[in-house]
Image (cartoon, rainbow, N blue to C red; front, top):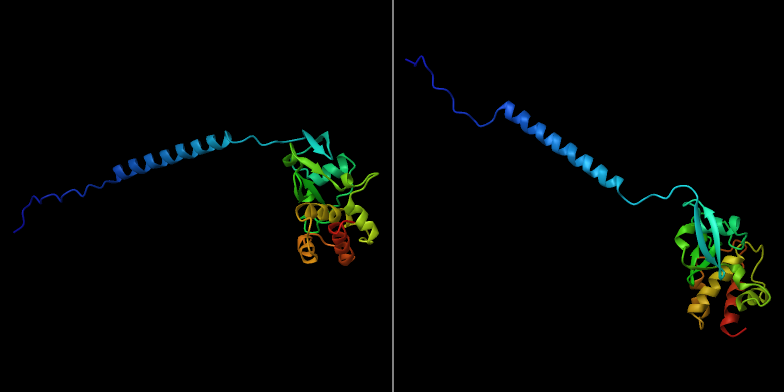
Length: 202
């Protein structure tokens, strides 16, 4: 015969009330962490918006321009400073037609933001011309190293930068060093001859 008073089952240590109370605390903590993260993000670096005044050193002169942060160096050179030697052939810089020198290194002005060039020395193909043109410019003329001429400024700057670092370059080295520039007219042979003429002293 069973007892009329059954022994109560031992408590498992789990109750819905405790569970709900605990999950509510977790949710509240998560919300506080999210708010704190948003607050930290809000205190992050300032984003530059609208036109900004920049001072650029171009071909030995400091010039002031006003442009948006997204403006490329190529656009500043062509449309603010009227230096049209660097050409807008390819947005990704693969043609090499927008080659300029920044602190002596060849870069694509079409893929360089103008604001990143502040405080640096910028030289365009125009700096290699004038009454006493650079030896590379003379060699390009003497060896007829241009056809339509659209790629020529980029090649001239690239050759000047390459020969500054490799004054005794061989033909193979010249060809390898200029593989970032494209000539759609195919005057590569004459361009290489012009570069080698400078190597040999004129």
